[in-house]
Length: 65
Image 1 (cartoon, rainbow, N blue to C red):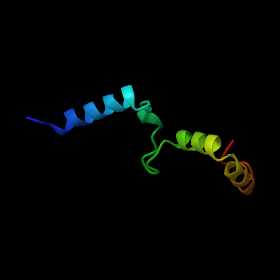
Image 2: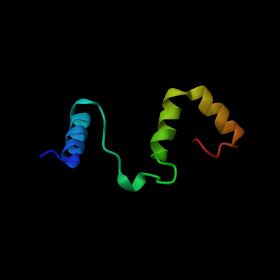
Image 3: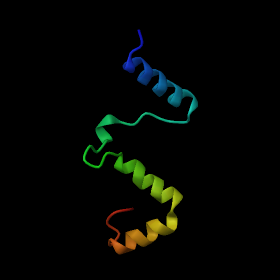
Image 4: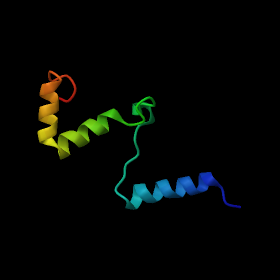
């Protein structure tokens, strides 16, 4: 009999081993925002430096380091 949990475990293992994914720390997950805030900030810093600079200036350098 197939179970949803087996499918989830198989998918996770495949993504971790072959998909370039890494498992996040569950304690770092913000349930209210439904994301990992540090990962979002790191993504913006790496992929959108111009936006990061403008956004940071608009917010008195208080959001993105």
